[in-house]
Amino acid sequence: MRVAIIGGTGFVGSYLTDALLNSGCSVSLLVRQGSESKLRQPEQVLIVNGDIADTESIRRLLQACDAVIYNVGILREALRKGVTFESTQYEGLVNTVDAALAVGVQRFLLMSANGVKIPGTRYQETKRRAEEYALKSGLDVTVFRPSVIFGDPRGTMEFATQLFNEMVRPPIPAVSFFSGRDPKKGAVVMSPVHIKDVARAFLATLENEECVGKTYALGGPEALTWKEMVSRIAAAKGRRKWFLPMPIALMRIGATLFDWLPFFPVTRGQLTMLEEGNVADPEIMQALTGREATSFSVEHLDYLGNQEAVCREAD
Image 1 (cartoon, rainbow, N blue to C red):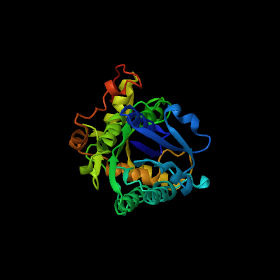
Image 2 (image 1 turned 120 degrees about the horizontal axis):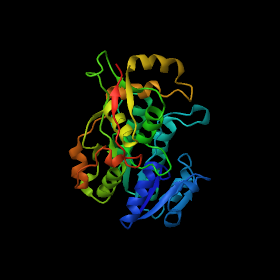
Image 3 (image 1 turned 90 degrees about the vertical axis):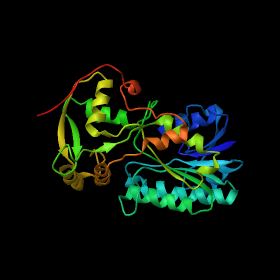
């Protein structure tokens, strides 16, 4: 079976590629000119140069393929470069669905995100519209909505590594976000899911007809607060860390003024999604893969370092 991946050069895409190759599938990747160095196993995949705005290159990619995975998304727009939620998460998806219909590739797996909706943030709305377009296309579509994904970034960037760099490494208290007035009642909660579990879920559904037309929320075995996640990351790096409770409402004021600046840490949209939380039922992942999901524990954060540490909250 030959599977095309659009969005195969980054963190998630590299693991999807590995899982498919290890299962005996052949893989074709759409790669922007000059990005070939990002590939971990270039000799084992078929490379087609192009991008998601180039419909002809997408058609070339899909020739002789049996399935396609659309795994493109951004966390922040770069308006000056023309990189927007609309262009990457919706228009690119439309181009890919239309190309699949044109060349006769029926099986379509879509990487979406937990919590997408209309109305919502621009991120949420473009992801949700992409789901709707794919599901109504007549293709055999399965949609995945993972919570935050963690795992060895292998030279790229992922959730836990980013939190370490932004929250744990600096010699200042880590921020513990919360909504409302009570840090305990308004805690931000997520279900971190391991990248290998996500790849297993894609692989398990690829040739399963019962999964066609279905949407799956993917989460790890625990629903953790922001403080609990940062604490475990600190422990994995042998760090002691204090916490400063930070109301999201206060951060939103700063984001309203400065989130157009690239160096400002969060956007208004990201704060809205933080406030809403990001939790998924762990039994969904277990049912798909036939195994218990990997926990967001010091043991499984060993790619950061697994020494003991004590995290304390500032008074």
